Image 1 (tube, one colour):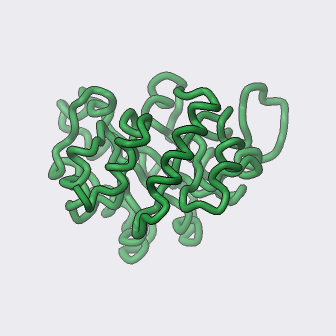
Image 2 (cartoon, rainbow, N blue to C red):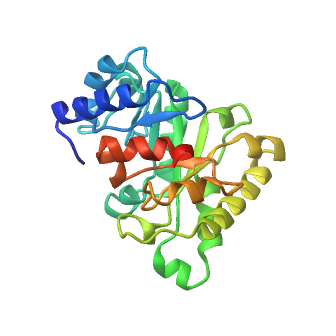
Length: 242
């Protein structure tokens, strides 16, 4: 919940300029709902795409005051939606079941879902982090088809590393990514599991992105606070030059 519309536009225009010649990296911005339409206009014909930070679990319009349908998000210019972010789970009662319903609604609307999973510090200290993340992945993707898998991205965000300055080591992150890929292989098949992108999120910055991206099962990053400054986010996207 950052950025007024003009602030979001300024950052987006800076990124459009900074990243005009970037290749081999897909760049997606997830502004607040209020700025989506404005950014869609400013980023038209650029190499930067838009995501919503959440979506309603219902595709069709209805008496759900305060909710935003995936169909509305698509209309506003989004191609992606972040679903089940840890803050949605922590503060807004998101469950594996509601995440699953939202993903299915997004798929129906033609949006790619970035499904977030991750354990809390207490769950990791109890040694149940793999079981928790496995349950979240299975819950989020319940009932999805092989065709649906083409429009799914997984984001692993250890809750204990979000906004705390604590980053999971590249090895710790990669270990969980490997677990997630194994679960995806069981849900779909090994080939599909290899094709699904798994992002790491949790205090990602320009000074740790390169080491993270060198890990075999880390395909990208879900960037939080570091994305609020265009120059820092540019460095992260251009991690190969660091």
